[in-house]
Amino acid sequence: MKFRTEVDIPVSEKKIEIEDKIFSIGSCFASEMTDLLQDGQLQTLNNPFGTIFNPFSINNAINRLHDSAFYEEEELITYNEEYISLDHNTSFDTRYIHQTLDRINGAIEAGNAFLQEADWIIITYGSSFIYEFLPKKKLVANCHKIPQKFFEKRLLSHQELTSSIYHTILDLKDICKEGVQILFTVSPVRHTKDGMVENQLSKSKLITAIHESISMFEDCHYLPVYEILMDDLRDYRFYKEDMIHPSTQAVNYIFEKFGKSYFSEETQNFIKENFKIIKALEHKTSDKKDPKFIEFREKLDQRIEVQRKKVKHKIF
Image (cartoon, rainbow, N blue to C red; front, side):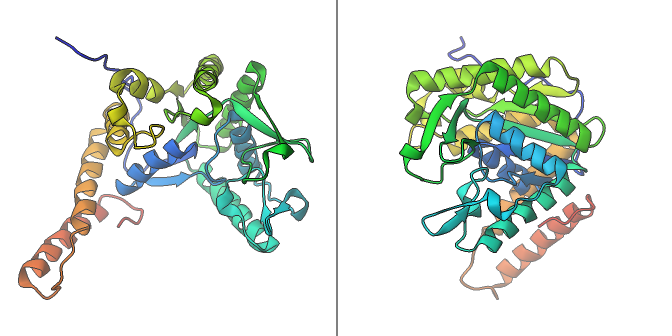
């Protein structure tokens, strides 16, 4: 007797190999998945604009990365004695204009270079809601805790959503390697501050727009990450204490399902061993001269060296 509905990720014909480069952008869930890929010692670059949620802002970021379009002073604003970009996450904010620009443009340069060699793109949309910064009549990616009175919140229209996704795909197919695989997901993180009904409406608009947009392209796929948490796990024990974000157990479950469908056998074994090494590296001792600890580290170093010989890029 089955007591839950299991949601599977369709098995991909093309597999992620250990030398592949994986670019990801979008919500905080994208960062959690990238952290696991990095622990597995794969080559990744995540969120060069910081965490952003809606397709319009993600498309803007991809377009700037595609064009290697650096930001200028006049594109920044000042708030709370910091220079900020409304297209970016708060992690780029500094008290000095040249530092903010250096952070932003350095990330654009790195992102542009990485995209040109990327084999896989993972885009995780979080919300269909967007805010307009009224003083500049500008749609923004992040409000930077500026008072609400300066913004107007609304849902992106279906046309705006599909147009954003469509142009994102075009830019990626132009800058990336031929045959790049573009994977779309909807974040399972619940935007409860929007309201429960509004959150469901927002997510459903994203899912509809993704499916309509990717039907026009080859090598674009939808990963049912949202459905796995909503319909497969479907229990508050798979959320963190805030009841909004997936728990570590849930993230690992989704990552495992993703790996079974998208990793080659070699990649699965490579990541599995690297996870074990990461865990072993966490082992601490109060006596580093203890013969048993020295032997433990020597064997661990040997395992690391075996892994290093499997790839050209630097690991551990």
